[in-house]
Image (cartoon, rainbow, N blue to C red):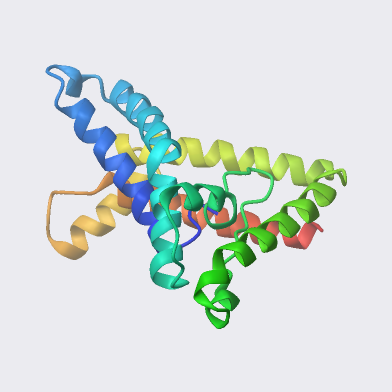
Amino acid sequence: MIYSHFFDLVMKLFSLLISLLVFLKIPGVKEIAWLVIVLSMILAVLLYLGFFRTLGTYLYAKFILKMELSLAQARQLDGAFAPINFKNMSWLPMKELRNIEHDKRFEVAIEIYQKYSQKQQIENNIPKTTKTKILRLLMYSLMIYFAIAGFMNLPPANFLTNIFCSIFKTEKYYPVVNVLILCVATEKVFKLLDKKIK
């Protein structure tokens, strides 16, 4: 999954937006579009992993789970609310925490996450089929291409651009929207295929 919850999506988009703004401010760099894309993606990942991932976890815990915690405590729950494990991108919403006393929610969340992590380690030791490995490799390759295609307006992103421009009667298009649509659709299709193979 590309994002786990609303705050995670916002933080990922914000990281990407900041990194694009940083590189687009450099004089003469607009002529080398592929370099802007590559450097922006690298900076966006660094920004997300360094700070915005934890901020998204903090906001989710604070506003959705009504949990009292610090940013340091939120960092301990990053793996539960904003996983970056490419083998299994599922996350733990932990909505059941809303039924627990406020002062115990963080401790219970840590316990749930530790149990989940142990279960994941056991499952990860089960060998994956060759078909599953090929599907994942194909999915990640397509997502990388779609990220590039979205920003350079190559097929199939240019089809989305044409549809968008004809619907809204405009010449402007938003590459990030193209990338998100293509990557989310790809992830959903491959998830279905993976379930059918298993």
